[in-house]
Image 1 (cartoon, helix red, strand yellow):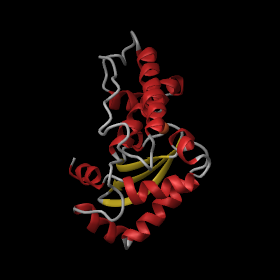
Image 2 (image 1 turned 30 degrees about the vertical axis):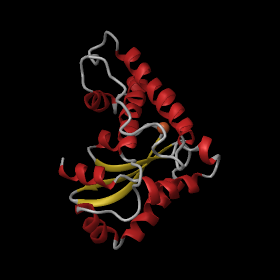
Image 3 (image 1 turned 90 degrees about the horizontal axis):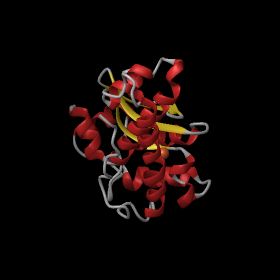
Length: 198
Ligand code: FE
């Protein structure tokens, strides 16, 4: 079974003016797609070829001979999760079950937003910032390069891609502006609430 590139959950221009359709042409059409193509080439005619994406990630996470497979598989998964973490007219204060959990675990939405921004901003080099749930408690973590919470048995609820390819066309080097726009206008709280129930 080949790994496929899932369709975007919104139109190419739906995240404007915060993320341009040009960024999505490259980020989704080139970067995400290339991870899919690379992964399929790397697992061709191996015992991983018939496995699900999640299982490929788990089976290669601690195997230094399969780093390239892990990196491409994790990046396929992370990007699909990232697109779902974004929605037009999103961001700002959450609704639903996640809202009260944020108040309990962070003290307030403002504290959460500050901590999420700090994690995304201080991830050195390429990587990801994640809102996760572990032992029924929300927290924020960051991962480097392709690394993903699911490789460590941790359940993510939302993420922000902080690789330069995510923001350079729209924000140049100003990662902080990109992060602010994501948190204030694009985070998909409905997706986070759905992940809580899975
Ligand atoms: Fe990316």
